[in-house]
Length: 429
Image (cartoon, rainbow, N blue to C red):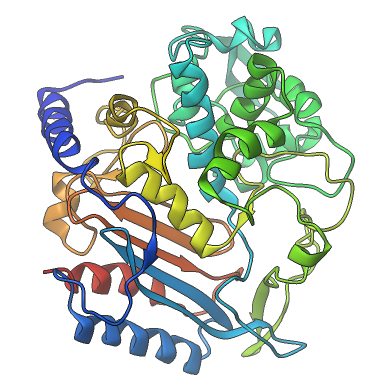
């Protein structure tokens, strides 16, 4: 990994900002009441509301839930449109969404809890805990005719830090950008995202460990199933099922009562339908390589740390507020503020180029180029999104959280994502 002077400058500035910002936010999210909150324009919040109404009226999405939190106060929380088009069920604020890759930050947080307890090191080889990962191999040749391939030994072992930062060389199967990797993962029977079948992460990860890598660990950024590997690591190190670890160490302490891999019957009734647009009309998304009903049907045995969780806007806001609070929420400390500074430091050097983003141990991070682009937030704003059209961002300088939840697949003409973020930051004084 190439480390340059600019990397150290950015890291130093980010640490300074983190030191000043992460401990100065209201401890628990609460409604704002009827009084205006200093530092944010109500007129501009109204503009956001109008934009989201227009998004629904233009048929760009069937429904959504949006939330804005400033200084720990909810300044905007609205539900619009329909949660299920065929039944004409209206969207509600407490609707549950499949958050897909928004699961990654939660899994990373669980890893860092174990790191704080001295149970793992970030630069430990993963093979120390999952022996199947020993002696990793890099793909060198692939035959499309019979899917056979050749490999060479990787330059070094895969480390936990590599898996957290998508620099391990692992792929992402069916959503991988490399057709060869798609075919290799498919032939091996890798579960890439989620499933209703009676599969467990231990079986999946052990098969994954034997497959070739895109590249040498640490040499490139390749979006991967690394956080699924981390879910299995958590089971091994903690001695607890992954879902129970998240529940007892993160969800219960934060009051994230509607977040988990699978839903009970009452929660299932609040699950938003995944929609796609066909000839201008919305319909339920069909079963493809995954079943959209995975959170409420099937075996309920597979806990995907990279893509499997479902949640609400409120629950996810609590998780982000914990980070803005320096690791504490509702009187419970999840992580130390010094750990959060590490998580929020650029971990990938210049591997992402100068497009405005770095990557830490749990989130994408806005860098100086991102600040200059405008509309992304302050330096160190952290963010990510999910496969089913969900997104979030949190700014440690202005202490602002934005969450926009939708459930769509395929092209819809939706422009609300970038507009929402840009307009939220334009409302901050």
